[in-house]
Length: 190
Image 1 (cartoon, rainbow, N blue to C red):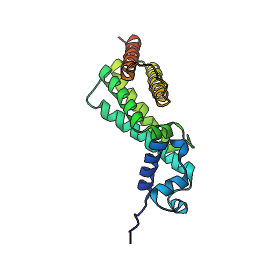
Image 2 (image 1 turned 30 degrees about the vertical axis):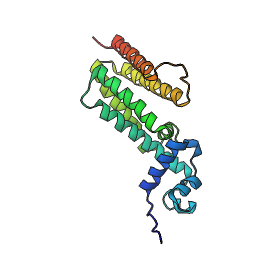
Image 3 (image 1 turned 135 degrees about the vertical axis):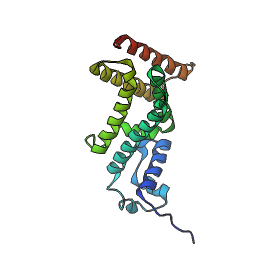
Image 4 (image 1 turned 60 degrees about the vertical axis):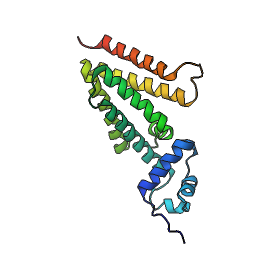
């Protein structure tokens, strides 16, 4: 007789992460998750209220994981090198966890305090990296928004298969980030 694995919230989130990374966030359902966990769907309700709560948990996990990738990349670096490395880390995270990244950008409750704190951690990390440029506070916020737009836009197009030309996509990304860095230097306080 086989012994059943004890299910807890961390196991549920891990399996849900695997599912969304493999099949996409829109394919996630309580039924599919239960099937992958080899349990009956009602058993999941002992751990969560439903699909929206699960998606919210995935959103928080995704933002925190993105922050981890970027933080590791920033350690020991500053200035242009730090901007390049956190940008590469962002791309790496999206490539390794496309579904979890998608969850981190589409969440049922934008007012969730844990989600907001996780998002603020990412913003603060980028602001710390940008400190090396002595930007005015308002300009630094604009630069955070700009970098996020570049990274999200690039990864979104890549995930959709939108870069069909026979050019090295990593070289395109490198040129894009280097151009952004040149832009930072033009608004930096001398």
